[in-house]
Figure 1 (cartoon, rainbow, N blue to C red):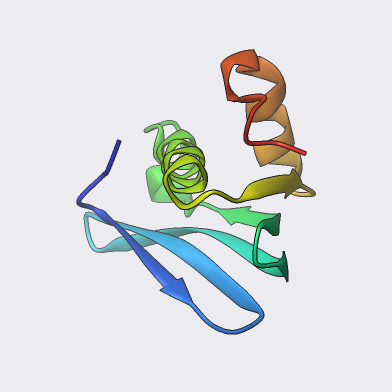
Figure 2 (figure 1 turned 60 degrees about the horizontal axis):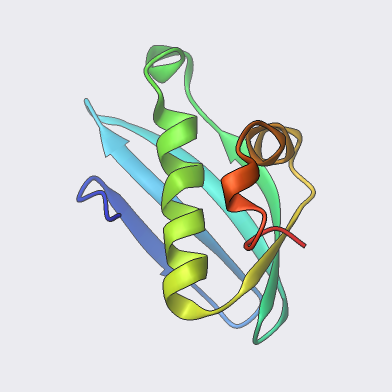
Length: 95
């Protein structure tokens, strides 16, 4: 699943998914552990986007990207960890 409102920014040790909507920006950030593992460490959603599903969309994008790119995710971010627990069908992605 791809979401056209979400972009991916990557660097050698860190990266983020950014959701642009209504002039606002929500993000899910990660740190690179290895070529096949990342740590999802933060999800930030501005007040104006809370309750709109912005955070969920970011995590869904993370899951789809992990499956397509062949990496696993350590969910250090409490929101991402909570979403992983609620979706056992994502167990293949979360370490």
